[in-house]
Amino acid sequence: MASIYTMLRGLFPFVKYKLPLAKDVEFEVSRTKHMMAYWNIDCNGHVIGVSTAKCKTLTSVVESVAHEMVHVAAERMGFEDHADHDAQFLRMAADVCNSLGFDFKEF
Ligand SMILES: [Zn+2]
Image (cartoon, rainbow, N blue to C red; front, side, top):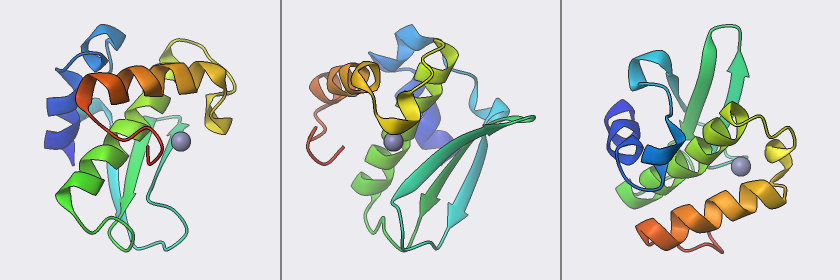
């Protein structure tokens, strides 16, 4: 997952967000059936988790990490309501989808 993060971090538009290095992000693998992936931030920094129960393909893992990276970027930019996928989050997500070929409806 760290390698996927690093790859995406170097691609437009993520490169312009100056995201933390992968070594400074905690990655988790979960078996939850409730969500594809998740992001949160705690005293140690950003946490990105992906569910292997929901993400069955490499493509879905890459897209899920990309989605959570939009949360990381939104948090760093100070957008407070991105956890609820507010308008700013959706603008950033659309930029990511348009640039990297993800399906916005599935993102
Ligand atoms: Zn989200």
